[in-house]
Length: 153
Image 1 (cartoon, rainbow, N blue to C red):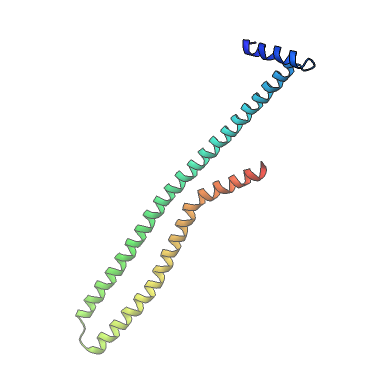
Image 2 (spheres, helix red, strand yellow):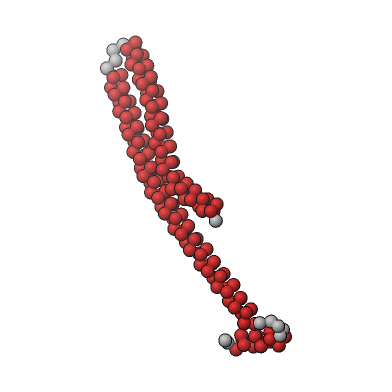
């Protein structure tokens, strides 16, 4: 034992003859060791949870990048299709020989473009919905696991 511990034990024995200082020191030591062990367990759990969250975020960002690329490519394809349809329509309009043919051609084009716009909107909505699901899935899984772990603890 150190000098301080010996002096403390001697003081306690003189002040309180029925008090056993060695037992008190053992209890304090056991309490301290238990606190250190609990701190290590909490730190290990925090580290594991942090790593899980980091992996979930990395996966989510990778999914967001892929979804963004997919959405951009889809948008470009739709814009290309609309542009090609417009140029084809202009070419057809140049060859028009009568006003009635012009009206008929224009009406058919507008109808086709409206139908196309509705279909394109559905396609973009499907791609966007899938993108949101793909991006949020890792974070959602990590959150659900964390909640489950909290309920167990």
